[in-house]
Image: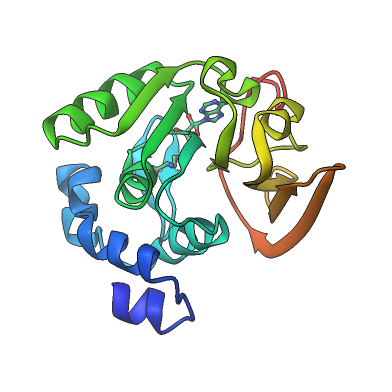
Length: 204
Ligand code: SAH
């Protein structure tokens, strides 16, 4: 998976490549899908949600330009795979899930697999996590209809936010950097994610 889908397609960040070599993706999908776990496509994880294609995970993680000391917030814990990849790179991962079934299931999985630098929370991630802010980087793994203002405000100066923004059926993957005077936005290209539902996202 890492050689053919990640390195061959231009991902170069050694921290991202190492992390994706380390995290066993098949442990984050249901038993019925274990044989497809390393395929070049997204997979269903229950509750109408999906775990992204490996390349998208690599691209988003590389887009955060991490060095290893960061505190990172993820919105949309889902299966826990993206958080696990981040946890092999950075100091601590804070991850928020709004679906209670997924939240409980994945929290248990992190305990079982001993991912001790991942902190979980059951809430609306579009509001961020004020008490633990500011964050060096924030990664949103569901598609929003706009950029949630609280997330930008909870970044350190120089902090990066990666988020898919657009319509219900397609979005643009945005990389937003908080600067001393405002924000700088780059478009990483088209993508398709499940809905980001919350106060600063789509209505439920
Ligand atoms: N990062 C996940 C991807 C899961 S899909 C993984 O690696 O498996 C996106 C997830 O975002 C879903 O689980 C969905 O329930 C969750 N989600 C959607 N809106 C949210 C919100 N406002 N706050 C937190 N989680 C949200």
